[in-house]
Length: 519
Image 1 (cartoon, rainbow, N blue to C red):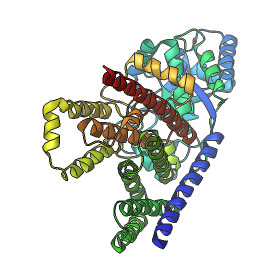
Image 2: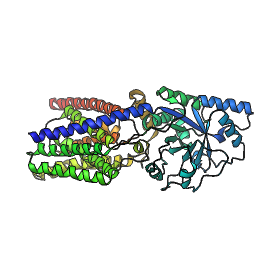
Image 3: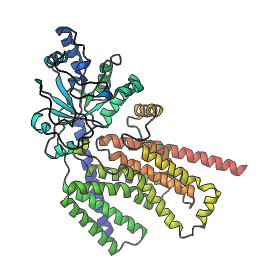
Image 4: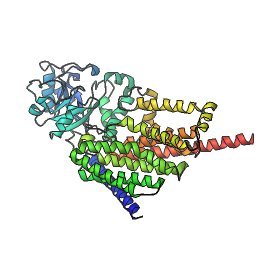
């Protein structure tokens, strides 16, 4: 009994530390709320008189534009070409400085040196996604300029620059020309808003800023409506994690595993000894390479926590009680992962959680294996009979759903999101602030509410879908560039909606069954 109390205490301490780190992250998010815009210098009319040009630039400055960009690399996807500073753009840039605007150089990260020009940049935007090393000029020539990280085109070499001690980063979002054609003004404004609210974007590179009527003005209103401050974002304040946080969370996870094993059988000296060995192994790995250890522990929690929670809770609970209990546990696991990986490099997406696809599909695979292994107690005849009656459709549909989830995951999925789905997402964000994930409120959560303790393939399929929903909860928290408060809000919205949908479907099935019995 004393051993159980000790394990529960260690688990409670790990959850407390995770919540403490989460509160620190919320304070960091609340202090980092200034958003600015950058527009290309070439898109301004250089034929204007000096007075007219100054008035135009002053107006842009008042709307939140903080810098003009100069492209020193060809960017066909944005319909931008390399700028020649000998033409009228040079006059625009000097006038911009008089209006209080900065200058942003857009440079290919593969360039070995920054072009020698008279103007010095306040911001440098690296655009190459192929570079694996930091250009030498970044260290020698950048000076006090801020280094912009263009979302979805982050050079991997920036992580090395971060480890050297550079902290003057800012995340930038841009929308390509073909996306402007497809989305229209409403969709474009919604995408900018999501980038700022959900992904710690603090500079918006607004190319083709004259494409829509009052484009910049409407965008500035949308950003201000989010509660953000329009202006020049500063470098984010330092936020780093420590070895003790890693060790406490690791010990809590090991304690959780031992408690699960104890719930399935008698707590033994062997289980406790394995727990001590596990904590010792984590301690040694962390002292050798803390970054690798944090990544490995985070992946183990993401893969194993939903499976273990379902294995334990389904023996005692069902219906909405099962869904709520497991979802609370998955949220705790998600907060633990967020606490493990909470430092500035993850917030700026210079570093990120490894194994997103594995963490999404592994819990469903593990629960399937576990349940099928238990079926051997009654033999395989029952399973074969169900397959002959057409139940083979269940694994077929399940494999199809699994393929769809894998291909649709990530920032650049193989199966892109259709425009009608984007419209649904935008409406959900308008109504609920944080859009719940479809995998949770439409699939996984209703499946757990409908699940029954029956050894049939349909019920096994529902349990596997339920595990997918729990994996999605944890996946929400491993996006470290998303504010923790927004992840919690998103999870709560998904839980409430999924619970309501599941209860409604359960009521419908009860009504259909009652009508069928009467007839």
